[in-house]
Amino acid sequence: MAAAIALSTRGRGISTPNPNVGCLVVRERHVVGRGWTQRGGRPHAEARALEEAMERARGATLYVTLEPCFHLSPRGPRCADLIARAGIGRVVIALRDPDPRTDGQGAAWLRDQGIAVDMGLMAEEAAAAMAGFVLRQTLGRPHVTLKLGLSLDGRIALASGESRWITGERARAHAHMERARADAILVGGGTLRADAPRLDVRLAGLDDRSPRRILLTRGAAPPGWDAIAAPQDIVALDRVDHLLVEGGAAAAAAFLRADLIDRLLLYRAPIVIGAGLAGIGDIGLADLAQAHGRWRLSDERHLGVDRLEVYERVRSA
Amino acid sequence: MAAAIALSTRGRGISTPNPNVGCLVVRERHVVGRGWTQRGGRPHAEARALEEAMERARGATLYVTLEPCFHLSPRGPRCADLIARAGIGRVVIALRDPDPRTDGQGAAWLRDQGIAVDMGLMAEEAAAAMAGFVLRQTLGRPHVTLKLGLSLDGRIALASGESRWITGERARAHAHMERARADAILVGGGTLRADAPRLDVRLAGLDDRSPRRILLTRGAAPPGWDAIAAPQDIVALDRVDHLLVEGGAAAAAAFLRADLIDRLLLYRAPIVIGAGLAGIGDIGLADLAQAHGRWRLSDERHLGVDRLEVYERVRSA
Image 1 (tube, chains in turn green, blue):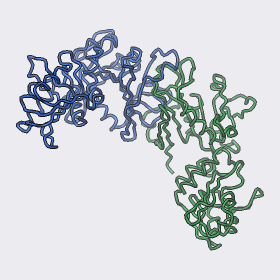
Image 2 (cartoon, each protein chain N blue to C red; image 1 turned 90 degrees about the vertical axis):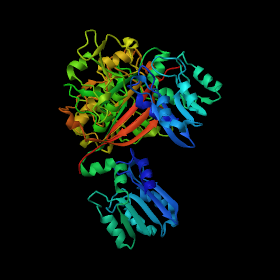
Image 3 (cartoon, chains in turn yellow, blue; image 1 turned 135 degrees about the vertical axis):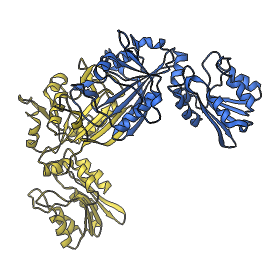
Image 4 (cartoon, rainbow over the protein chains, first blue to last red; image 1 turned 120 degrees about the vertical axis):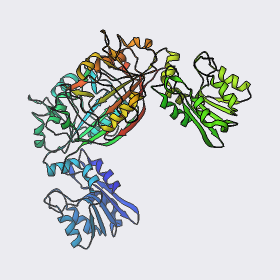
């Protein structure tokens, strides 16, 4: 299942309006099929994995990160049907589909066809890999990551605005990979005016993965951009499950104030800047006690001399 | 030798005017004597270790983090003499004594007595543990650590000045241990007026280890404090080998601007503050390129939910 979850992340940033699902078909301890949701949401991961497995699917075990869909769609076949027709012997599912059109019915129907079904294996990890889809289903909004490239003392630029470069090449390449996994990137008006960022993915082989660009502004969107007036408007963004907020300080603060940041992606360079621009503006924090217990370290790694720290918002369920 | 270096840190903060040395006497793979420089610099580490070993020192191996002293002092015996008289068979030394009164003569004299001598084992680690002594000998100034308790976004307090608490109990206990290992703590005038910090060591069993308090001010020192007018004046501080700078932003910036910080001790809490007080003021940085290559991560650890990052100033030798 860990391998299926890893496959699922390949569809992040391109699979909307469908969830980025990963799927493996395993027969006699050999992987005979692999799939993940393709651009635009079709084909589904299961369809791709079964297509690759061909007749080797008969009697095999299928691992999938999300319950196979059971509702009819004009856009393609139901995965539950495909699985039964391929002769799969056993289906292992991570996450039950929160979409009310499936929500357990896919698994039930497969069992009715005489297929062994296990559901719940690594459900938490799968949900994290499909965080945008899950939040869309539960809270009706995208998953939002705030990315900052910081000095040790929390600065994102000199007082002059100079910010090239705080972090090194490996950290910047990692940030571009994160861009490729987002459906859209958002910056504030000040950042657009000051930096005119391209916000594209500059990684070999992934140059077609540049996400949509969204501006947080009360004014109109420039050509090639979408605009929203307030963080809360992300609920209305079509086909955006994973949103990456790249600054500046006012946009970051607006999202934090609205408690709409789910994940902090902090690239920290081993430099001291001193007086300079802060990464995050006024978030309306009245006392320190309120600040505690909100963020949990979920990943940390070295990227050259820089460090990446990933924090997730702790939300009581 | 690693054990001897660990012992040496017990003398940090109390051993001036002498270096904080650690010493082990090992006979037939058993430790028969341990010592570190005592309060005020005497007895020396070797004297304590030999005293503990008694007649078991005969033919044993002595590990010591610094070359045994060879110069005569009215304050106590020469360690080289003590070692020879105890009948030690072999001496393993980490760091050659940079003090010109010994500087190789201790080792040479021991060899003349027919004792086997090895010098240089873990010399770098030993020098780091006695950093203050080494800097006194080489640059004529104490070793200076800047300690900051920070939020993820580099704030040390709310805009109101509230800073209790950013970090948790374990991080604060660690910071108190660092205080106990310093000869003196320095804060700026603003911090004294705003926080009236006690700057004492509040750890059971170490309450007698509170270091001297030094104020960075152009004015006079309040009762119980010493004062210096500029960071450069640390060269004149008597009996201070290890200085801990605890803030605020102006004092931190003054020391960084003078390039007199050797080590950053960053306690980072998993909180976001947003608009608030920065930990470091204007350090006179003109462009980002100058900021790089100056700091190297030397330690990192988790302290409860907080993280400690230790950076050392990279200085070309």
